[in-house]
Image (cartoon, rainbow, N blue to C red; front, side, top):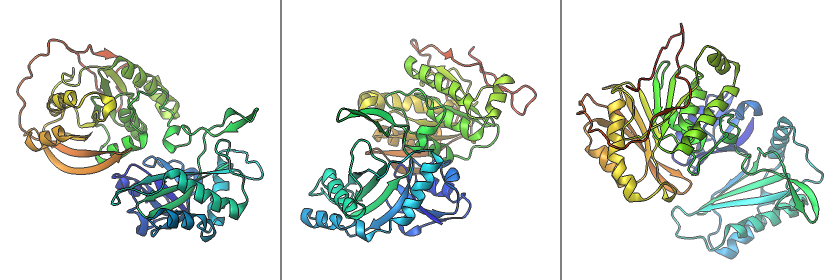
Amino acid sequence: MELYYASCAAGVERVLVSEVERLPGTRIEEATVSFYGGILFQTESSPEDVFKLRAADNVYAYLGHFKDVPVHKDGALSYLKSLASKISWEPALLLFQKWQAMQDRMLQSPLTFRVTCERKCLKMKKHPFSSVDVAAALGESVYNLHNWPADMRCYNVEVFAWLRDSELLVAIGLLYGKPTEQVVDGRKAPRPSRSDSQLYSKRLYRKALVPTSLRPSVAYALVQLGHIKCGDVVLDPMCGCGTIPLEAADCFRGQVLCLGGDISPSAVAAAGENARGILELNWFVAFLLITGSDACDILQWNATFMPLRSGCVDWVICDMPFGVRCGSTQARDWRCPKVTLEIARVLRQETGVAVLMSQGKAMKQEMESTTYLKLLQQYEADMEGILVEIYIAQRTSQPIQSLEKVSQKAPCKLILISFRFEGGFYNYKLSFD
């Protein structure tokens, strides 16, 4: 059995565990499931099967998990400089070679390497050393053991070190993007693409992005937190470049109707391009196009006043804007109750469910005070250093009074032909009257 470390957004590990457990011949290593932002597992499955994981940001060949790294600088660096000799490298390097063969990646001899460190203090106030200090000390240890030349740009092997307080996990990267030509010391040399070296970067629909694009692995986790079934209508009213509805369409392969909308013309254009890109995924989606069906509908609208009939949606799954790149906190707090009310309006009474990811007190207060949604579950997650809440709420039977008409609203613009089956199990047509 081969030993992997799979990373994901902290807080949604349960979804990754559930997916990994479905791999044939797999065992979760319980001792380290709690490591912040990932899981450790052994499997007999092939690299091709592991490559298909959707809840993982990336997968790595596991090297070691060390729980008592000294917290003072001199002791920590001295510990790291002798660490490589304490690691069993052979299983990880054999797994590394399998993955490189799968990717048809040519490796030079001798191998070149680099060390990348990511630190985070959860209980400690601050580490007395930097990530560069950790990478340099561990890199010296690796060089002394293997005699591999270090190369920060044109490397064959990348060793990753994640330090959480005094707990260290070390692994080898398995996925490397297509190399780009870099001029190093007056000569051209191939450099692995960092942006193309994540599992989620291989999604075929991920062609156009916006500044606050959600990672597809997180979108998959949000989709899996619901119990979507065949024939359901899935909506993201603030979809950005369309990651959530397209991930749902990709997962269910034409068995659900996925809708996405956004007020930004550039976001709608990006989502439309991505929606067309999903047609490359497999022959079944291409067949839907031939029969007049699409994988996902993308529209331009105002999320506080959507052109949808009341009670027509089974699932609303939405990454609501958060962080400084999404505008002022005051504007988001003002918009939050309006969007939440509109979400409740379009959900089917008593059966419709919303999965909402948000940050801030406004959404928390809305979830506590609204009578239209009943909170079922709540999770905390870490989105690249920003702590957010994931709310799962069910639509109640409480009727919603007719909404006051909005005098100025974004135009609703249909980007793709409506999704419908002729002679199939589902026939749905959007109405804009």
